[in-house]
Image (tube, rainbow, N blue to C red; front, side):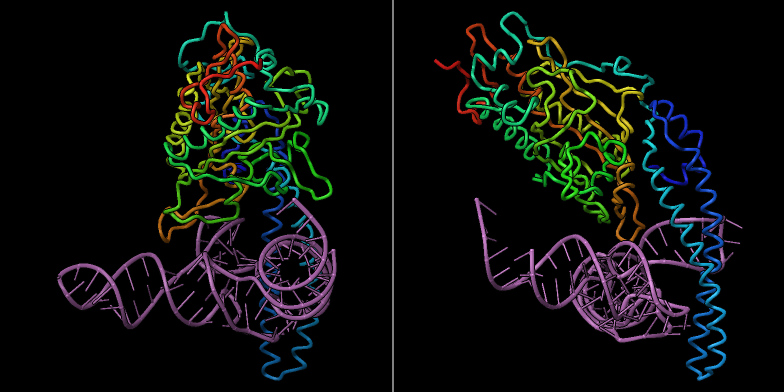
Length: 426
RNA sequence: GGAGAGAUGGCAGAGUGGUCGAAUGCGGCGGUCUUGAAAACCGUUGACCAGCGAUGGUCCGGGGGUUCGAAUCCCUCUCUCUCCGCCA
């Protein structure tokens, strides 16, 4: 959510931000209803004040034993009460509508965000490493078949397309990647590990911005009105929903492994082969709760933490500055990390590094005290994948496939894998 | 799933219809004392909304109701705890 005062007083800046993001939101309707509500609430408050005064007087009259006067006053109060009831209903109606509209207004892009309308306008900031030679490699789905480590057909049989079975060294590689990444962020980068619930309630999804706008993208358990998480960002950010953190608790840095579940409702037929786009995948996610003045420095740290994984795995990747039109609804600033997959000849988005500023914190009501007895204020939240497993595995298999069909295991994974080589079955 | 108990400020914990936004303790902040600190003592200390402000309003798990008036009575939902049942 954007601060109401900002919506009122800096309307044109808000409008400009919406235009840059290419998102049409009901700002004008919000503004006019807000004005109506403020007028109404003022007169309601006056009536409530009068009613409060009257009730006190009645109480005093009773205390003095003036029964008749009290009874007369009571009748007067009755008519006030009806007026208040009517105004209260209207007040609530307006407020509900305002909340509804407010939740549809996107976060504004930070001033450093470049203009653009689609991913074509994103700008590569820099690349790390060299593109590996492509002669010994092939798409990871072919490598996986040679090695017998992924089973797409059986995944489809037991759940549907986009659900993958990992087998043998494939399953072990997945587990190795998860453990390695968690350990890296815990030991080297100082994050606290969280293992969150995979099902969350509506409030949580509103807090991080998936609802109300993106309900159709979520898997929903109707009977219990619970949602499968699309990312650990959702439960981890909501850890501190409706809380006031103490000054010494901020910054908080969490890292969480979780399964992620996405319907990919609008992406049918896109990147359907192999591991490129699946309904269920594993991911290690970092989430930060920080003081507002530090959030842009923290964004860079977060990006470096995510990059460290790719560097240690020796994978070529690039850092992309996301343009306003390609950014997500809740974001103020976003970098993507894209890893090179030589077998499919594509850069694959493997991490989104985002600063939400106070947008999520307002929705989820996450505040902190800057000093011991200072007034609470909203934190800034950030998150980054650190990183997503399937595409990482795809890039890894394609990068490290050798001429003889084996896949070399990067050094940092060898102790987790128990081997330095993945060999095709005899 | 069944039965019972409970949910109050940062924390603990009083308060069962009328100055209760809420006693008290702890914690926090400021001060006195002290070379300094601790202890002791004194003071202070919830959040949100409307308003330029004075001020006013709302909030005692959420929602609804009764009443001139609700933390307090009623209904309902959620959560926590105890016991029973079922179960990985």
